[in-house]
Length: 400
Image (tube, rainbow, N blue to C red; front, side):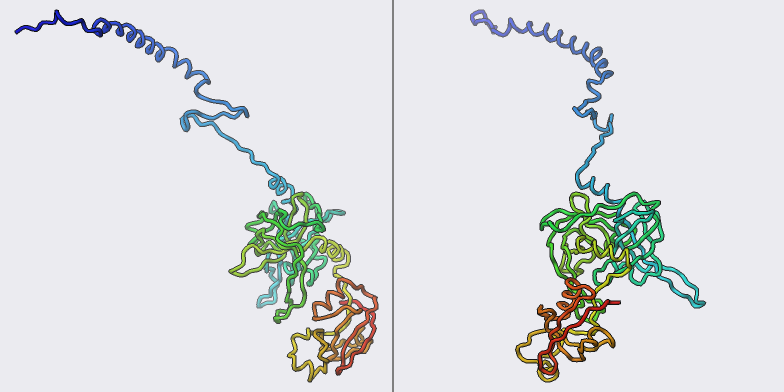
């Protein structure tokens, strides 16, 4: 049987089948020319190998095949401040002599801390640090930011303010820090702490934080008898302050010194509570230590204790105090020929007022004397003896 198609219409695609062959051949030929001639010329040029951005830096399009170094310059206000201030922050080494069996002296490192170069004058550089950093030192050594070691002279130190001033040769010292002020300090203001936490190995460490509180009072027990001897007025910050940071700098955003880092609360449950001595408090004391070696404070000449350390029953039976008395300090001993002795004060007298200012405890009395009175001032003292209220006037002497 034969197939017949003469009666069907022709296939419309049959006539077009040969039309695409010629374009295909032309495309192949053009592609070959591009690969063999044009691409090698482009590869030799910089059109593909590198791409430049508007900063002039170049970056490779092929990753590791043709890498170009990329340098990023990150400069901020903090980095600029740190670069400016770091040369003024130093390490302080407390060296104490030890004696061996043959009574020969050997100096050994008893502790380390930090300090701040606050003045350069007449060939000397002056450093402020904490008193507890240099306490008991036979020698003091200062370590500059470039690891230069210089022997320093201790000009003076003060237990109550926890400040000390050192002096050293200024030949290797580049600059001193600019002093700021704490008068207008605000809570939340950013600050920078610079010091040597955990010793000279981490010298020049920088931490950042804010001012957490501007007028904090922290009780201090100098003789470790469990009773507060003084209340330090400090700045609170959450910038990390660790052992070795003591005496370092607390800096504002103008690169100025606003505090001397002093202490932190060291408890497991506490994080980010550090304290600095305000520079406005420290500055006059630094000047006094620099010039006189000591801070001169008024002196009464009595050994006193807070009344709240005595059982309430003793207030009536032993001291004979009336029920109207709610606080004060009792005299345990009187130094012979002291202002108190000359004014007639005696053992077991209870002082309740100085110049009409109420005295509730030992810290109150010291604050009035140390912050409001001067040597040579006359002070009216109100006290109780055997239940009788008495008054006397004395002239403040010099605490030595």
